[in-house]
Length: 256
Image (tube, rainbow, N blue to C red):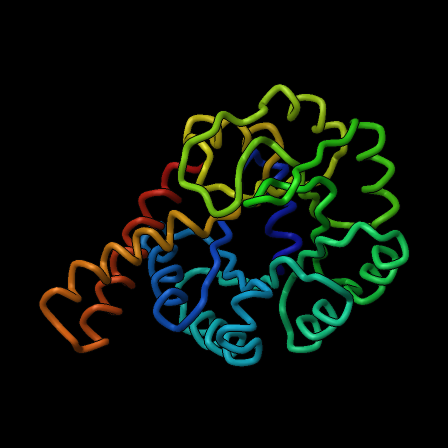
């Protein structure tokens, strides 16, 4: 089953796949090992910033190798493509899906062509991050853009924040209306959402939950604990990996 069908199936059944950002070998291993603990598929995400840091080809190779060995399905997703060149590079390498955050109509049309049969995620509403201004649209406008873009998964603004741990209440009343879009919805900034709200959001159509900050926090705490007693990277990075995997397994068990 490819990732498009996996997310579509989850959407039909009122479930969600967890998608977590990786930046190196240890974070990727922590994510996959955590998913194996709960026996659920996992989406490994590589953002444009992570690609600049670790190399797109290098991170892709790590993800694919781990996926071949994993006891659960592992899908690779390119997160926050800023232009068509980003998108083309990711799909050319073999990423299973990719997300575009550009609203230009011409680029949106081209994005569907570039994606071909592979899963395409489009940011129809901007989720807050730092000084970036968030947006919301009416349901009719969202429906038109969903058809126009040909996207398989739609990013909507449900009140979360990127790069934040502070818990926000989700705009669950909006989800009641957005179900009419008939497409799997993606929740960005999952680290800032209350768990009880997330569970309800999944039941209302969110089929992909993106998380990074909370996972990084767990990793960093593990590293800090070991750096006081060891200068061996295998010790402190290994502890970070273990803590990240523990956090992921605990969090993923709570999602429908």
